[in-house]
Image 1 (cartoon, rainbow, N blue to C red):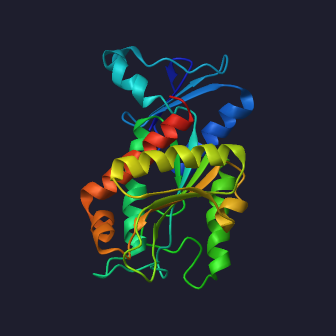
Image 2: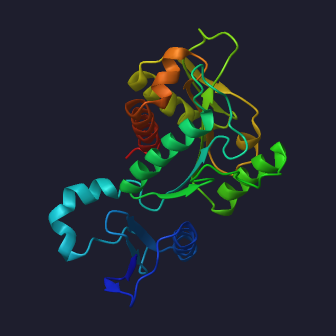
Length: 260
């Protein structure tokens, strides 16, 4: 990754990682600098004169239209939380598919789409692993997810799950929030887009007192994409197209939230 400040490249390059991107973003925020992350070219641009977004290098201006789209979420940090993972499989579908696999796959696709729009993405996990540690209690695991978002000073927190019920005819999409104005707004936008694009029953945006919604310091939602216990929706959740459609839909909802 290269870093450019006021039109000049810093010597050398650094390996892209979450901590470096978060540090640069927080530094720019504290100093009222403009910052822009171009994931396609692995380039961070900083304007130290004011908070306006720095322009693209001349060599990239042929792609202005594409790059403008890539900058729609410039300066925004979004924490994605794929539910369960590692020693915690979550719910299991009728054919044996696991919630933890579906949530991670959707989150990784969503990460890619958000980064293409210029966002800095923090993942509570990016592999089939426990967020805290294998011997952690359920509460410790939840605390680790919240801590990842709060330490990064993320602008949004999005937790991704699959719903499940003893009756395998239960179906649909639900997005939960903790009731504050911004979380409710985000939940409604993501819920509407998901249900429309997936063609699932719209179960609405609802209040819930989940730990990860109560203790995160930013607008936060928990998305139940569909019912893994429903044979039809299990296929949707485990399919390449279904996962990509879910990621596209959540990304669209986030873009609508930021009105970009």
